[in-house]
Image 1: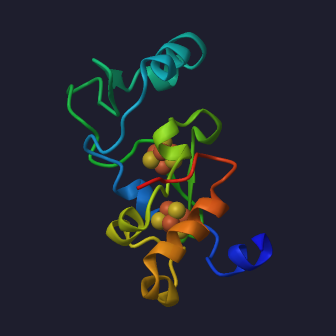
Image 2 (image 1 turned 180 degrees about the horizontal axis):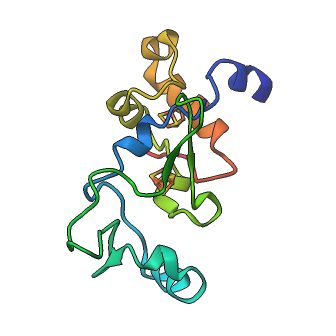
Length: 136
Ligand code: SF4
Ligand code: SF4
C-alpha cells in the first residue's frame, strides 16, 4: 500500500548533504540539457565546459561545491537556485540505497538497513514521479 510505503521512509528534509557531494565533477548532464541551458538559461550554461558541470569559468576547474546550493537564513536547510532547471542527475536522486548511505542521506531510517531490498522498493515508490525504478 502506497501510504504504508511513504510513511516507512522519511521524506527529504533539505539537509543538503547530497548536494554537498555534487561538487568536483560529481554530476553529469546530457547534451540535450546543456543545449537547453545554452538557449534558455545562459547563466547556468556559463558553468558548463566541454560537457562538464559545474566548472568555474575563471579557473576552468570544477567547483569544489555545487555553485547553486544555497543555505537558508537559519543556516540549517538548503535550497537549489536552479531547482526547476536542475540536471536529471539531481532530479533522479536518490537512485539507490548505497548512494544514500554514501551521502548520509537523512531520508534513511535505522530499519531501512535491516532490509535493503525493501528499502529500495520504498525509495522507488517514493521517487516514482521522478524516475524509473532501479532494476538489478
Ligand atoms: S544543481 Fe541544485 S540539486 Fe543539483 S547538486 Fe546543485 S544545488 Fe543540488
Ligand atoms: S541527503 Fe537526502 S535528506 Fe538530505 S537533501 Fe539530499 S535527498 Fe534530502
